[in-house]
Length: 136
Image (cartoon, rainbow, N blue to C red; front, side):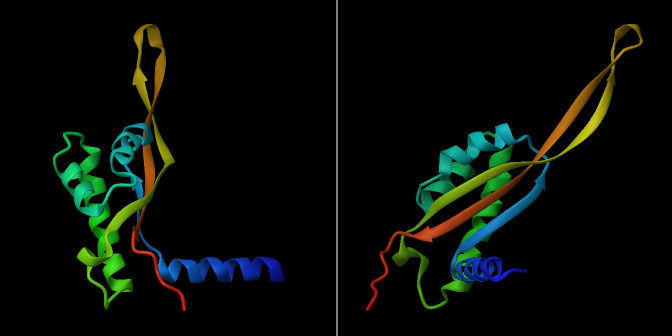
Protein backbone atom coordinates (compact mmCIF):
# COMPACT_ATOMS: atom_id res chain seq x y z
CA UNK A 1 0.00 0.00 0.00
CA UNK A 2 1.32 3.44 -0.91
CA UNK A 3 1.99 6.08 1.71
CA UNK A 4 -0.90 8.29 0.59
CA UNK A 5 -3.37 5.41 0.85
CA UNK A 6 -1.90 4.38 4.19
CA UNK A 7 -2.22 7.90 5.62
CA UNK A 8 -5.81 8.18 4.42
CA UNK A 9 -6.66 4.80 5.96
CA UNK A 10 -5.13 5.89 9.27
CA UNK A 11 -7.21 9.10 9.27
CA UNK A 12 -10.38 7.11 8.63
CA UNK A 13 -9.53 4.74 11.51
CA UNK A 14 -8.99 7.66 13.89
CA UNK A 15 -12.27 9.27 12.84
CA UNK A 16 -14.17 6.01 13.46
CA UNK A 17 -12.82 5.83 17.02
CA UNK A 18 -14.73 8.97 18.01
CA UNK A 19 -17.77 8.54 15.76
CA UNK A 20 -20.70 6.57 17.18
CA UNK A 21 -22.47 4.57 14.49
CA UNK A 22 -24.34 1.32 13.96
CA UNK A 23 -24.75 -0.78 10.82
CA UNK A 24 -27.39 -3.24 9.73
CA UNK A 25 -26.37 -5.40 6.78
CA UNK A 26 -28.60 -7.47 4.48
CA UNK A 27 -31.87 -6.27 5.95
CA UNK A 28 -34.66 -8.03 4.02
CA UNK A 29 -36.62 -4.87 3.18
CA UNK A 30 -36.46 -2.99 -0.08
CA UNK A 31 -34.24 0.12 0.08
CA UNK A 32 -37.09 2.30 -1.14
CA UNK A 33 -39.31 1.35 1.81
CA UNK A 34 -36.46 1.76 4.30
CA UNK A 35 -35.59 5.24 2.95
CA UNK A 36 -39.14 6.41 3.66
CA UNK A 37 -38.62 5.61 7.34
CA UNK A 38 -35.02 6.87 7.40
CA UNK A 39 -36.11 10.27 6.10
CA UNK A 40 -38.42 10.64 9.11
CA UNK A 41 -35.57 10.54 11.65
CA UNK A 42 -32.66 12.21 9.81
CA UNK A 43 -31.51 15.30 11.76
CA UNK A 44 -33.95 14.71 14.64
CA UNK A 45 -32.95 14.40 18.30
CA UNK A 46 -32.57 10.82 19.54
CA UNK A 47 -35.53 11.00 21.94
CA UNK A 48 -37.88 12.25 19.22
CA UNK A 49 -36.51 9.74 16.70
CA UNK A 50 -37.13 6.83 19.09
CA UNK A 51 -40.68 8.08 19.66
CA UNK A 52 -41.32 8.44 15.92
CA UNK A 53 -39.97 4.96 15.16
CA UNK A 54 -41.84 3.34 18.06
CA UNK A 55 -45.20 4.68 16.84
CA UNK A 56 -44.69 4.36 13.10
CA UNK A 57 -46.95 1.79 11.40
CA UNK A 58 -44.27 0.80 8.86
CA UNK A 59 -42.56 -2.58 9.26
CA UNK A 60 -39.12 -1.13 8.58
CA UNK A 61 -39.40 1.18 11.59
CA UNK A 62 -38.93 -1.73 14.05
CA UNK A 63 -35.52 -2.57 12.55
CA UNK A 64 -34.47 1.08 12.47
CA UNK A 65 -35.60 1.48 16.11
CA UNK A 66 -33.29 -1.33 17.26
CA UNK A 67 -30.46 0.03 15.13
CA UNK A 68 -30.83 3.49 16.68
CA UNK A 69 -30.72 1.97 20.17
CA UNK A 70 -27.50 0.20 19.17
CA UNK A 71 -25.98 3.46 17.90
CA UNK A 72 -26.85 5.18 21.19
CA UNK A 73 -25.25 2.31 23.13
CA UNK A 74 -22.12 2.67 20.98
CA UNK A 75 -22.06 6.41 21.74
CA UNK A 76 -22.28 5.69 25.47
CA UNK A 77 -19.40 3.20 25.20
CA UNK A 78 -17.18 5.78 23.48
CA UNK A 79 -18.11 8.68 25.79
CA UNK A 80 -18.15 7.09 29.23
CA UNK A 81 -17.89 10.25 31.31
CA UNK A 82 -20.76 12.11 29.63
CA UNK A 83 -24.49 11.79 30.11
CA UNK A 84 -26.73 11.27 27.13
CA UNK A 85 -29.29 13.84 28.33
CA UNK A 86 -26.68 16.60 28.72
CA UNK A 87 -25.04 16.11 25.34
CA UNK A 88 -28.21 16.55 23.22
CA UNK A 89 -27.74 13.57 20.91
CA UNK A 90 -29.22 13.67 17.43
CA UNK A 91 -29.25 11.48 14.34
CA UNK A 92 -26.67 13.20 12.16
CA UNK A 93 -26.58 10.77 9.21
CA UNK A 94 -28.63 7.86 7.93
CA UNK A 95 -27.50 5.90 4.87
CA UNK A 96 -29.64 3.32 3.12
CA UNK A 97 -27.77 1.44 0.41
CA UNK A 98 -29.02 -1.43 -1.69
CA UNK A 99 -27.65 -4.89 -0.94
CA UNK A 100 -27.95 -8.25 -2.65
CA UNK A 101 -31.16 -9.22 -4.44
CA UNK A 102 -32.54 -12.72 -4.31
CA UNK A 103 -33.73 -13.75 -7.76
CA UNK A 104 -36.87 -15.85 -7.88
CA UNK A 105 -39.14 -17.01 -10.69
CA UNK A 106 -42.93 -16.62 -10.74
CA UNK A 107 -44.81 -18.87 -13.20
CA UNK A 108 -46.77 -16.89 -15.77
CA UNK A 109 -49.42 -17.84 -18.35
CA UNK A 110 -48.60 -19.73 -21.54
CA UNK A 111 -45.37 -21.27 -20.26
CA UNK A 112 -43.66 -17.99 -19.50
CA UNK A 113 -41.87 -16.98 -16.32
CA UNK A 114 -41.57 -13.60 -14.62
CA UNK A 115 -38.52 -12.73 -12.58
CA UNK A 116 -39.05 -11.52 -9.02
CA UNK A 117 -36.28 -9.60 -7.27
CA UNK A 118 -36.48 -9.75 -3.49
CA UNK A 119 -34.41 -6.74 -2.53
CA UNK A 120 -32.46 -6.08 0.65
CA UNK A 121 -30.48 -3.15 2.00
CA UNK A 122 -27.67 -1.95 4.24
CA UNK A 123 -28.45 0.77 6.80
CA UNK A 124 -25.93 2.94 8.65
CA UNK A 125 -26.91 5.38 11.43
CA UNK A 126 -24.48 7.96 12.82
CA UNK A 127 -25.30 9.62 16.16
CA UNK A 128 -23.59 12.84 17.24
CA UNK A 129 -23.80 15.47 19.96
CA UNK A 130 -25.09 19.01 19.34
CA UNK A 131 -22.75 20.48 21.97
CA UNK A 132 -19.78 22.23 20.38
CA UNK A 133 -16.54 21.00 21.84
CA UNK A 134 -14.33 23.78 23.15
CA UNK A 135 -10.75 23.51 21.97
CA UNK A 136 -7.99 25.07 24.07
